[in-house]
Image (tube, rainbow, N blue to C red; front, side):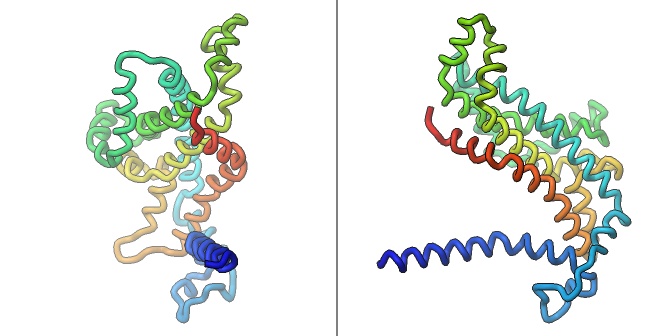
Length: 275
């Protein structure tokens, strides 16, 4: 096959892949900007004749959407920070020390990723009920933290493994304790990996639905996914409001990825390298 033809096929494939990936997002944005009567108009309009923000104003009229966004931000950030603090310590221990049960613990961490999360819903609900945390944002913080610690530990362990242990050993010779060496020497080097882990935890928390539905029933405590689910009615779906809510719900993650893009790329590259 000629090089030019091969290059043309690659470009065509990438263009088709781009269209397939981007079109759903484009359609959601366009739908959110259409008047209600034009959403299901025929023939289908891929570019509306008139743009309107009535769907965006409508979601704040029919629901407490600003409260839902605040709840999701609060729960996602707090849980991600707790996960990060615990995973940094556990990842460091699993990377730097060999002890009895080390391999078994790592196998248990990997095994948790093979099980669907909804299996734990019933026992978690009973636990939260015993702790009187139903209809309490703390129930989601605890559940999300517990569910994300194993994989976050695995992620950070791979970053610690590629950093020479001689760095903290040199700091300890200069008078630092192991914890001080970790904080002052290792963590600054680990910023890309830490940023990647935080974003992973934040996005998982932000998009989680099943536990939020199970644990929270009070409208003032609901998160974004639960609020979006409420737009699906028994015999109808409010597509305009749902599209507008979807656009607003993905904005925080887009902003987060935009600001942390450099750290994410560095983190993924470092994590893929063998130490």
